[in-house]
Image (cartoon, rainbow, N blue to C red; front, top):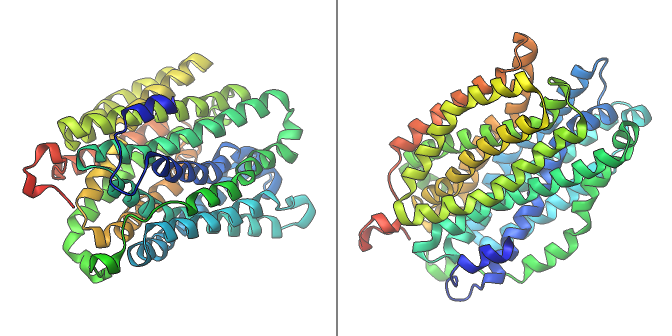
Length: 433
């Protein structure tokens, strides 16, 4: 699959090679694997590290721990994103990657609640905060790097690599979870299986850190004679607001789908290995369908790809969840996951490209990081918690469908109000820097 993608990516801008682009994307994939693997094993981590008298309490506490990783994302976006505008994209990405590595290794080594009591959830939440800080700071510089490495007529495709790398990470997490849940009993999965899945990401951290150090810089503020200030963002409040709304819709969809594994296990009473297959389907679908969305947006414009797949998702969500709740089997679980994933993946690259193209270079890293981190923190960190609570409060397993439809409606409105930024739809003088 990677080879086929490489064949449609044209040579990047001077000084940046294809291998540099893929090195940046691979680092992003590894960070998302390390961050999101927690959610796939939320049930097992809840039993191991958090106190709770019932399975529901364990799951809610574990999901709250997962959500803690989103609380620190805006701070990471502000600190590391601004650093990327001041010192360059490469130093910012290296810093974020190093902090993520510390958080990952630390989480994998936290003793159980039975062994150290309340120190276990405190340590787990602390390392999740560090991971969130790192990931919140990485997305802005990494996306800015891809935009600046691409030729204007290929920006949609290049920014789709950002979301595709997340899909690859999710697929790897789902594959690891499927294998472990198939070969281990529930006791082993709870005692060490989830730790093994997290450690797998940590094993390749030193190599990935070395690879990122070889990247050429795409933006040097001093050389360009540019100086950014946070006060300059006031002239881009409309872009920021619409960007947060569009990414919020994408985020709710992503984390609703990320939650399919515990959702199917706890509320639909499906086998654990079958539930993990949904995560694998989510990852593969995101990886495969991000590229067409980005590529088509380079040809027909960003707005059609930001609007129409989201409209399709809005109308398809409730019937799909209703059929899943009725049948409760593997084909319907995988089918629902794949269909919603396709709609969401087609939108993602164009959204990232439209936001990045609407921002000046000297503010791009920091503003992107903050827009992404705020939308993820408010909606990504709470989606699984809110949907689980809604099911418990209403007694209706279709509650996630209502929540997803509401988010989709907000995303559609924001996309309609956004301006078209694709170079193919603009005159030469209007093309974003």
